Length: 365
Image 1: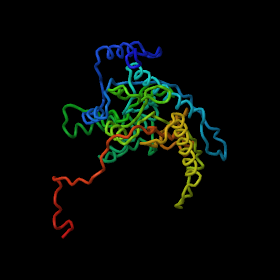
Image 2: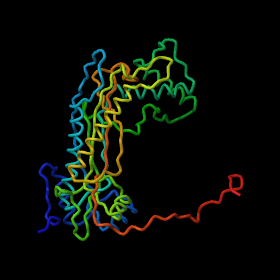
Image 3: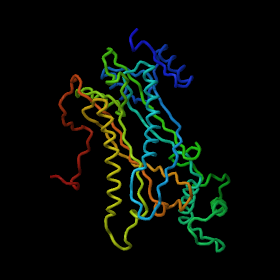
């Protein structure tokens, strides 16, 4: 029996996942988050989607507190860097195991997200800011019994009173939820202190003719390329061999975040600290690509993530100026190698017949 016909179910996959994957192989039913355009182009490239695959890891990251000494220098928090990288790797490995169970050659459209634990102090601060902005725009004045401090305890009582007055003034019979009580676009989860959930999701695909598209380790490749980009890459004579990552958690002390009052000048030490962090992250991404025998990495993105997890709620509005900044530089991309060149036509300029003709007032003759 060939590798594609023989299911390989990793023992650390949950029982429900193992049952779902086995049923999908038996029924030959696939699920996918590909758009219609992506689905068509993936088939055009010679592949078939075999199923939506996922990996997850809920990970406790113990906060690594810098020394906070006078003249503390910037530097990497190596323990936190390794913990976050390990958590992502666990999620990616489980997604790879699901793809292996489906007999896939690879996974495309990989999305790697992080759901951070909810910090009650910071969540309350964000609600306070929404209420404060709303109250200022409406024109509510602070009662004389309330001290003109920045963020005060018990503000919810005053906010509820103002919202009640506002809804009564507008004659609303059904009182809607106040703006500061509504859910935000960025979700947080009560996973526990200093805990985060890492999720990897993508669509597993398999070559229709049984050609070898796995990486040098014999595992399904992983890629964050869209269906369109995957088709273009294959037609250009390259193929993906892996989703590669690099990260670096870096601490910048408060002394490097402060500028001279009234002067405009570069924060040189702060600039160099972030520069070093980016370089370390990119070097680690390149190391992963070289381990896969890649000749390059496409679609590289660099992002900055906040992973402070401070133990004390010191000035949550602008704590960095007191406790320093803890940031993570996170770099991802798709490692590629040359393959048999496909038939890709030469790029041509296309003038759409639907283009509107510019009026005389917009230039031209």
